[in-house]
Amino acid sequence: MRVLVTGATSLLGESVAERLRARGDVVRTFQRSQGPPGFDQFLGDVADPAAVTSAMAGVDAVIHIAARVGVTGSWDEFEKSNIDGTANLLAAARAEQVGRFVHISSPSVAHHGEPLVGAGAGPADPDKARGHYARSKAHAELLALRDSSESFPVLVLRPHLIWGPGDTQLIGRIVSRAREGRLATVGSGAALIDTTYISNATDAVVAGLDKAPELEGRVLVVTNGQPRPVSELIERIVRAAGLEPPAVKVPYRVARIGGLAVEKMWDRVEREDDPPMTSFLAEQLATAHWFDQRETRQALAWEPAVTLEEGFTRLEEWFAQRT
Image 1: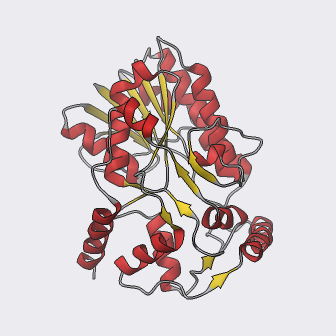
Image 2: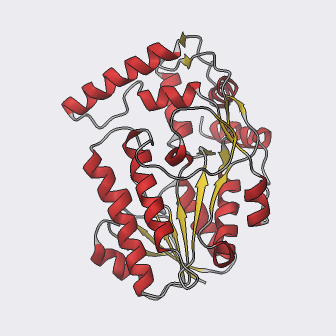
């Protein structure tokens, strides 16, 4: 297939593009800055309809990964990238008569602050989603599902907490805070959380591309299916980097209230760096969120090939090579 991959500078985007090329697909990437070498690259912003139309010309399928992520920034910025950008891609794909569209979303679109224990893919709800990122992704997912049809099949995948060597989001932020002495355990640290190793997420996305026509209009959460206490996950990450796990514990209520105060301060002075805590981050660190993977594995005919244990071994080896 001739596949357009948006957001190819991200960990998942680059991995998916590489995997598709390795199996023989013709891959075009679309991102704002120079992406991985060896691809037919289009540089531009998904919020620019003209740039999207140009990148879409002649492709058979789309994997839409590009998004504004993070916990800082105005609503207008998230709306422009995640909602308007998705609408532009959907419109251009329909006009080009693209045969399949895989939209990468997030479990946070259906997380309302309550524990998710063995949950399925609940409906995206912008009114209840927490934070600009989750709300904007919820709106984008609903747009994608609204446009899905037999002639234009859209499959929504929600990978949860993707990580692996080279990850600048989850791994990078945890390790950076640990090195600076700013990492703490929120609450008891016992909340069970699912994560997804990068190659497993990649395999699931490629499987979704292949099966999109028969899974039209479906929403599937993707994880390793190995929930672990958040304190264990953080400890394994920082130890892989050769650091000591956090010794400080902060009660959940204190972290959440403090996070709300910090959010207001960051918004007021328009800071772009990550605040030490936000209310959403406090909820994520103190609330169980893990997912029943039986439907996903059956629908995609996919299973994770890399266990958490193997993933942490690879992460430790990667850090060792960098010292």
